[in-house]
Amino acid sequence: MHELLERALSIIDAAVFVQEMQIRQIDEDLKFWQKQKPSEVRRTALEKWQRKKEISVAKRDQCLKLVRMINDICA
Picture 1: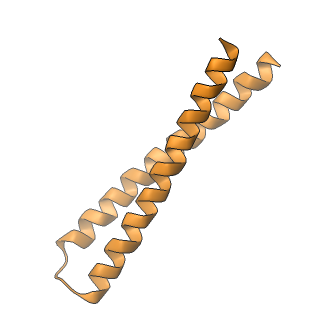
Picture 2 (picture 1 turned 45 degrees about the horizontal axis):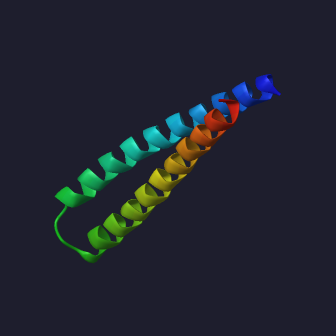
Picture 3 (picture 1 turned 120 degrees about the vertical axis):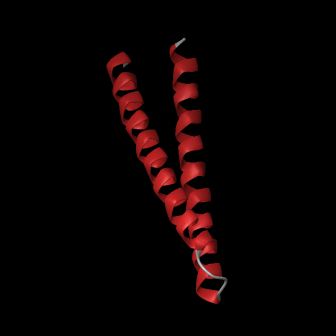
């Protein structure tokens, strides 16, 4: 059982890393669109990337909560 929990934590840590990388990339995309001239395309793109960031942050937070729960169970 202990080995399974360690493996699960390893997989979850990898998922957190992936979400962090996605958040960084999304931040770069948001900065790009924020520099563009005001337009409907810019507004739509900013909404799209902001929503993607919200989703990635939520996924990362869920993974971190799961890690805390597993650590509490193991303690």
